Length: 255
Ligand SMILES: NC(=O)c1ccc[n+]([C@@H]2O[C@H](COP(=O)([O-])OP(=O)(O)OC[C@H]3O[C@@H](n4cnc5c(N)ncnc54)[C@H](O)[C@@H]3O)[C@@H](O)[C@H]2O)c1
Image (cartoon, rainbow, N blue to C red):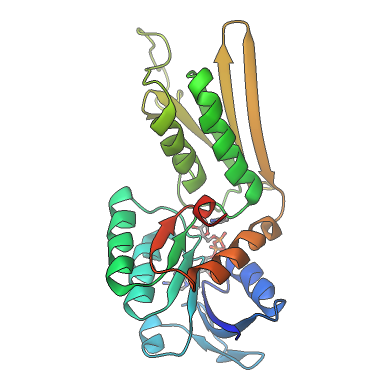
């Protein structure tokens, strides 16, 4: 039986790529499209909505969300309340919001996924970085994105930092008497190490984790050159959440 999918944010860069992916998979059916900036009433026979309230009672299984950080929590809450299993790529959730949504999904017995990165290479980078941090506790994260990205640091950088915090020996890096003569020069502080955000036209989504030790260095890097890199993960997410009864944070939980 085909899985019926709503795509929220379908006019955007990621949403439109997700629409193409859903259309190209016989096991999925595009059931509805949502975007407040849509002017059309339907696209190829698929109904278009500009207000999510009109989707109450709609017949669909999964809510794919690529919208914006300011509405991601509200949208995911709405999806769970209305029986749509959320597959959320939108970034900017706080830890408390993720806990809250996980609890709601348990109450409702609905599967779901919030994934700051759907690219398999980025998942591997996070895993390898956490592993390396056990041996190289001195590290810095540099994430690089296109200049339209609204939140900083990226959800991937935060997730990487959280995974590192779980296993790295606590350590405050840098000189004791370090002084920033220009505010922000050392980046954002996270558990004693630093995260830097680069925003430039031409970039898609990239991340480096640089490790330093006595006389040696190690650099791990992942590049998403094209948004298609995220679609295998979104496809997997859609097919997995309908089998589950609880929301998870991170694609690695479904691999
Ligand atoms: N998880 C991942 O792998 C991954 C990868 C790339 C980007 N992202 C994230 O996905 C999100 C979207 O990125 P983008 O580059 O496509 O942004 P975008 O600005 O191109 O598109 C966002 C779309 O969402 C729409 N929108 C805004 N509010 C909405 C609402 N309440 N309901 C429905 N639609 C709404 C906007 O009109 C717009 O068309 C960002 O948070 C970005 O960081 C995640």
